Image 1 (cartoon, rainbow, N blue to C red):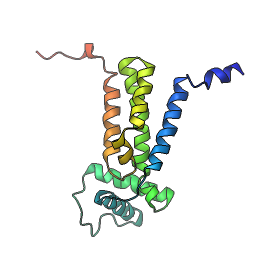
Image 2: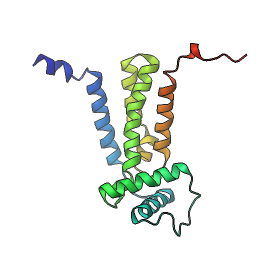
Image 3: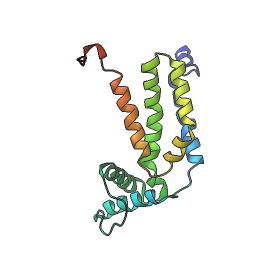
Image 4: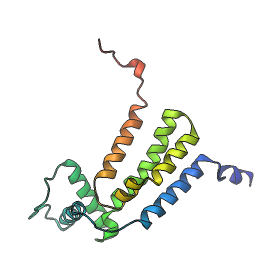
Length: 167
């Protein structure tokens, strides 16, 4: 019984991070508006065209580059798993937003070696307005933000003393 009190106590950082993620999910669901811009409609169209097997035929939108292809692929996968609807449309950005909170926690912990600062970083990102809004719109912003955070986390593990100096 003492093990349960110790492991699942609210002062445990893992429990705190879990609660922050639950709150972040609830906040993002609360502020979900549906399709509101042209980009999310384009990604939905491209994702649907992948599902239907005729990718980007009769497409009259913005140029398609790698990040948009990935977003279209993520949308197609979520359409295949969750059905063709607005909730499936934002599944990938939503998951990238939640993953970004977790990565921000570990990045902050790595940089500061302070669990309180890492928890505060996660809490701030959970309530950051632009993160909340873009988590519920089928844009590439959450994917890009997660990529930047994870790159910084990976680069924080690089041993600077072993890097060659520029002369």
